[in-house]
Amino acid sequence: MESLRPAHLPKPRLEKRPVRPELIPWSYPLLGFVVVSLLLVLYLCQFAQTVSSQYKMVALKETRKTLLRQQQDLELSVQRLTSLERVESVATKRLGMVLPELRETLDVGAYAAKPRDLAVVSARP
Image (cartoon, rainbow, N blue to C red; front, side, top):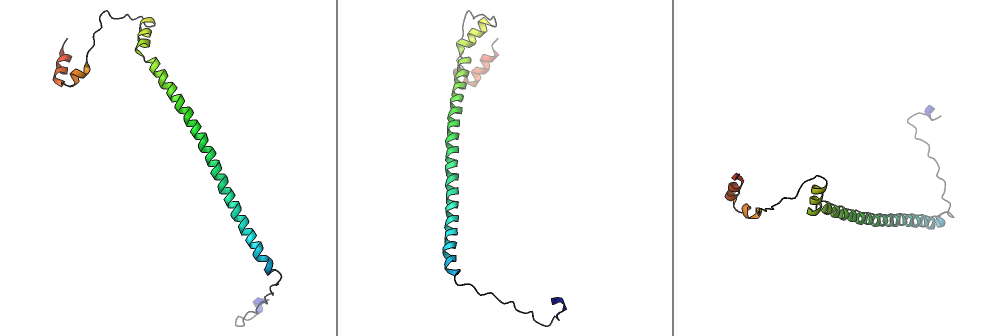
């Protein structure tokens, strides 16, 4: 019925219960145990995450090695497929081309040093 009480009167004070002295000796060790347990759980969680990250790193390294081996195998396949002997064999057998009677080679490096000579060579019929 506080609403019926006049506003100028102070509120009555609530009495505080006295603290039981037998609870105080047990509260500090209990609080210490809880804090130590919490810190231990946090440390173990951090350690578990570290171990998990290490396992993932090892797995990724193995995957990288496998992919590098596959890349090397593919590069070797490309070299085999683009070798001059194979291209010549496919051209003569599958496509019906014939080997030239006279082979002429042009040293491009000699012409690259002299651009004027290259223009003259390209103008030849």
